[in-house]
Length: 394
Image 1 (cartoon, rainbow, N blue to C red):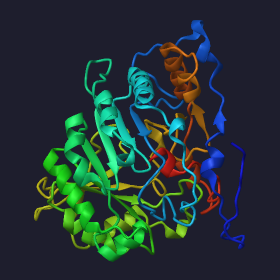
Image 2: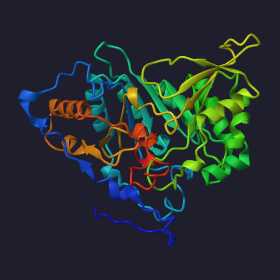
Image 3: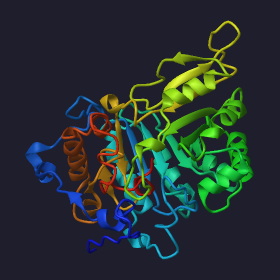
Image 4: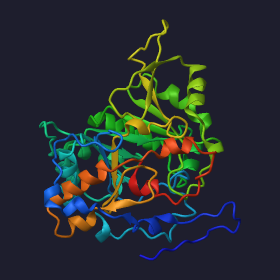
């Protein structure tokens, strides 16, 4: 596919490019050791990268399509009616995804999250979930199998997802106020339908449920307290995510980031919180629990999470890899290129070749973009043509 950079605006300060087509074919070369029989990497589940970080979490994008046009992810002026998505033949089949996932699990992956785009748009997704739910870790344990969704289709799909073997869901919800929510999703979708979907997921047993709110200054920060009030004591975990510079189409600027420290101060002005420890290694969210009258965490009131990739980098223990819908392996959410595993799948590569490629790729990993960003002046890297979040998931 040729490299095409298309200016959308004449003002050089607002110039944007469409990177999704352009970056898809750009890939790092696979390690030469992929095909060396005398350099086979053992699949012991103990794989680590250059910083000693294990491979534990695999996020799999199953589609590059979405039915929302949130401006921080898929702005409608770029992802419009004329936008060309990947043809179905380019997508990994469910069998190809499962074949790769089995090799990742052998290297230590314990959790798989299905993402998009909007993953519930992928036809017959339950078939893939059934296949992934049958996988076992080297210790014989089932995977933590979860999915992130905007909730638009959740009410009609929750029961079948659970029956297929999905364990839990994370729902993206950026506002409770209907006008704000419709403005954020840019397709006039009502917030009530997402709330109905959340309740359907709860009724189906897809829990514990997490709610993700991307906070963008000037767009929805006034919804922080209403969201906190609504989900406090509900049994659902609300997480606030700093607006991040993923991709190149969302026009990211540092002055639109509301730091998590400000979010905490705002909530604590009305609802007392106490810090909690991480629930597992490599967790992205800092946990805070709602406090009782004695200043202790009350589990009945629940907790919130703060994901602070911009102001408090957590690269040091990041254990996540990302597989795009067409088989590109990315080692960081902010990556510019991936590794093309589809060419192995559709070539003559054996399972040992696949495992060897994954192992050597992860072993060479040094990614620490968020730490590097903190060392730079604000907006220094804002227009780098990184891969889009809608292409590799969050």
